[in-house]
Length: 562
Image 1 (cartoon, rainbow, N blue to C red):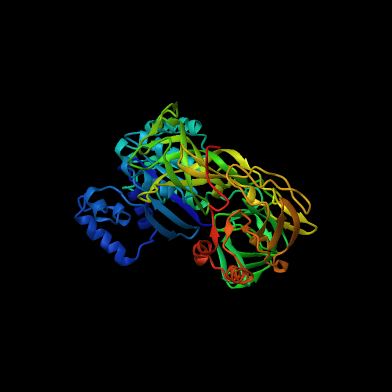
Image 2 (image 1 turned 45 degrees about the vertical axis):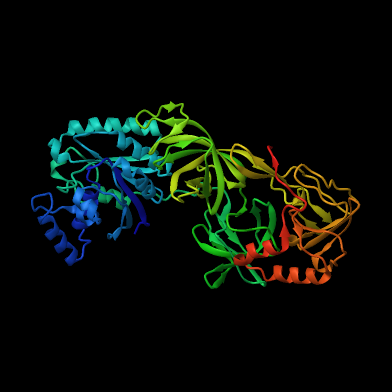
């Protein structure tokens, strides 16, 4: 049996998408007896004068039945002797384009219906373009309602020529064109005598046999971190689904965006240990040392994935309010949600011709290439190289509604990820020095951005610069780099010692953490309580912990511009 096929049906209003899937379920004997009886009874009061209305199997909402249209995305699961399927039946009306895009985001294949009496329409082109945007590579163009054009071979071939032009315009990878009648059942599950001129297989047979399994083009191993599991201070695991490649105990991985390296200590799948794991498996990974990893970070191996602060993306706009440059949104990319500003709309796309149109705004259901600046650098990549790290949604900060979705086309402002950047090193002791990180307020986006200006590595005897644009430290102070379990002692602007945190003793000088935030410690007792609180820290208590022990504005401030 072939593997699971996830596909979507789309096209213009009243092209027969729901009827097509309903007919497959009915003809393939995939209904229970009570479902079949209910369908026959419902059809008697429907729009087909008592004949079976197969669309009723998919259109479940009362509003859908009353209007004879699909509004919501209807998912159906069914299995034939040759394959298992999940199908998303999506609305054709332009008003519900966002619903259609949701369905396309999960699919491997798209069945686009075309009314034989209408031909290729604007909505056909829009849906094909959205499916392409969402990464679908396999397309079936079902030329429906052939019964209304008397099963004309000439009409079918004329539409097929338009489809070939659409394929060339959108650079579609794989297409199949099939003449069908969803209401009458022609070429749905069996070959039709009414289209004797068509020598290909019926729709269901094609779906059962199409091979959508391709070699994994994504480079290396990567896993976006969904959750940090820390039930107590003895265990810290990183949970997520492996999106590409494989990993094994002992492998060296890099945590992004920090760039820290560590070795895999343990791999857990549910409640059992495993020596290795591969693409598609949800796992918990523990490492052989503490690294700076939280939700939204990415664990990688043998790949060039990096962190970027500026991206260019193709965006499908879904909001009633037009998109204009300068507005701030929440950007969800991978498992990371971060503030971002659409700084420029480079051009919109004419869905009919593909022409690039210069514009300063984008209305609902439009597609455009936009430049987005993020509040800080995050792990991302081109959609064509690493799909999960290249697809995003824009969320309205006030309503929390999805305003747009899209894919990354270009990357800029790459963040260096050397784990020894601006760090403190003595023999085998190593700690990051984010005390030199600058904080800038951008007046265009109303956002605070972080910038790391130094690549220097410091050791005992080196003199440090205690004053930057957004920070100023005393001449003598100590740095407690908690994530690296290291203390750095500075006297008269010179480093006098770098030592493990458990060997550090309070010396009555000001204390800051690894990012330069003042720590509220005034005695050895305070230090003991602070370190014990940190050891027992859970994600749910992080905000409370920082509020109690840290002050941002003691040695730091935010300056204008960058």
